[in-house]
Length: 87
Image 1 (spheres, rainbow, N blue to C red):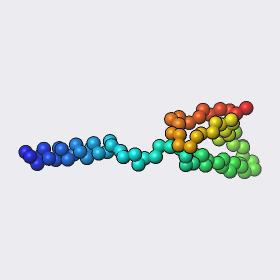
Image 2: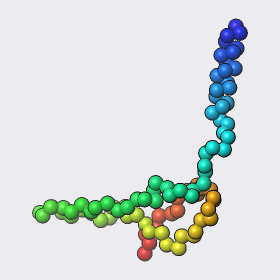
Image 3: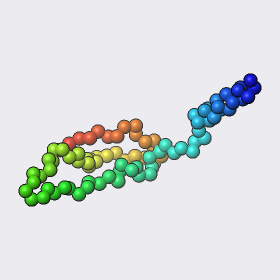
Image 4: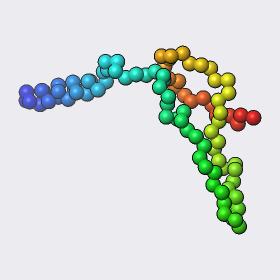
């Protein structure tokens, strides 16, 4: 019976150790994020005799306008900025 108790205590400690942290995770956004390097790809050109691609089916990457400058060391935003049509 003591082996079962020690096993349960060990499993409990292993489970609790996953919940803790010692501050090694950096939750600031000082480094460029992966999505910030997104670029528009090469447009598909339909061969002669075929209908061109539907421009309304594309999802353009919006350009930031009047984006505020973030201070160094500020935490990451919880949600991305809204996507607008721009003009």
